[in-house]
Image (tube, rainbow, N blue to C red; front, side, top):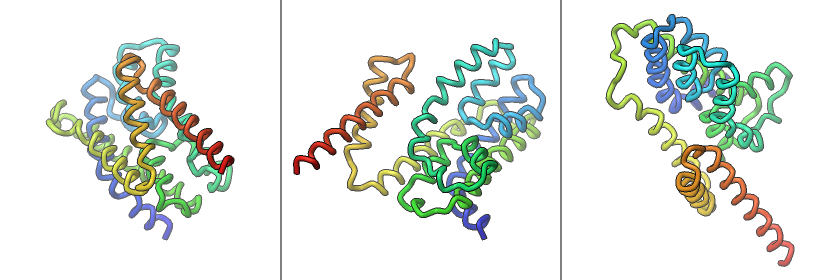
Length: 226
């Protein structure tokens, strides 16, 4: 029953993850790595955009220190995700460990939505398991069939943009009364792009977090005065 519900929860995102996984599998084998590296990366690393970056780094045999710094800069956003991700609902050390490992952008977006506020821990974990299976399956298919798939397919790279656009619209629909938050997010992105184009993502998160903190302080003081 849990699996069926989680399958329904993850279906819309899975449609986007499968072609992205295929693209990653093709990238791995066309870079000269064996097909099983696609399975290894998606099973053990499981970091989406970081995996695409790691392929050329692995081929070039870049030092581990440089790879670690790249991983930190790309995935530093997960530090902010942990503040509101429902890990407290997950029971058991093993389940908590996997849920932390599988806390991807897609899983975070789905499990922190308004409709997911009462999801039990098992439903959250099953959702994460299925999301990773979509990714692993797509990468495996792409790697095994890479000789039949061209290295560049028009429109395939837009799947990630389309996926996150849908997730953002769903979040905006759930938070209709909270218009300042998406406005602040757009402002943070524009400021980061203008002031720190080389560290866009990290700068955007810092500005966004600072803005939310200021808004929180102002809200608390306003309620106290009232």
